[in-house]
Amino acid sequence: MKIELLVSGVCPFCLEAEKVWRAAAADHGCEFAVVDISQPEGAALAQRLKLQTVPALLIDGTLRAVGVQSPAEALTLLQPVRQQAHDRMQQMGFAFSPDNRGFILAAQIYLMLAGLGLLMNGSLLSDDAARPAFLHLFTLGFMLFMIYGLAGHMLPRFTGNPIREDAWPWLQMGLAHGGAIGYAVGYLAGWHALIVVGAVLAWLSLAIFAFRVWPVLWPAEP
Amino acid sequence: MHKRNRLFVSIALVYGLLGGLIAIIRLVDPSLIPGNVPRMHGHIMLLGLILMMIYGIALHVLPRFGGFPLYSEPMADWQLYLANAGLPLMIAGWLGWRDMLVMAGGVLTYGAIVLFGLNMILTVRAKGRGRTLPVQ
Image 1 (cartoon, chains in turn red, orange):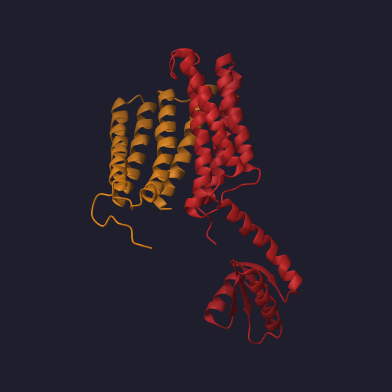
Image 2 (tube, each protein chain N blue to C red):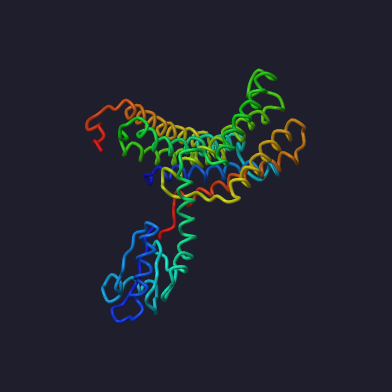
């Protein structure tokens, strides 16, 4: 985490702000820099941020506060950013997150369900009406869930960018289960409406996955 | 992650959504999309979603797991071009019942498959000059 303090040589409060933030940065192991707006680099930064007041505080390039903060206020300002950094580190951990673990486990269940087609029909691609059911238990169930779990785990690690979490993976998982099961049961039972609902749910799960993964692949410029 | 590999994964997602949408439309009203829709859907999902996702991820991880750099970056670039020229041609062929377009698209798609296969074999087996990774 990088803390930058924009100051001016004629600002009477900037020295006090520098003391507070230098200490806070040292306490929390953050990189710290003082940027003078009378210098070209500082002037360009102030212009980009449309700054009217110094001292001004930037954390990881984002303007967070202006004026002089107390040590307690500094801690309050650092807390959410530190939490984000902590969450991000967890995201970059080696082990599967609970949602990705769930996707991988579910994929194996769907594989075994799809494999029942071999027992019942002698083939995954039988010639009867059950063909789409077992085929899609394999594709929508096994393959798509494996993609969800593996890509959701690996892509953030390949790119160094976090994936959208919170409730999104669980919504994606619920829709994907509803889709795969609805589609398969719809075909086995001959309920066309359930087949359509299953297909729509599965599509929505893929749309949510794309929404989660897109900023991993194409992060917004800082 | 190389931009080309990110493109492969991104395009895979787009094909997945497209293939799914085609299937839903077909389920709602089979007359809305002309041509051989089931075959189109199957190939968009397999060659578009699954294979391009594998391309993007494998081009990134296999050289790392193998311990050698990718044998040829231009081959992987051409693989991207061929794969994404081939599948749209095949889709156009199925939409218009034009077997020649499907065939032409299939040839391009197969070209991408061969480029990928050879590139991966030569990467994992570490053939060619300058194939050692620098000592860290």
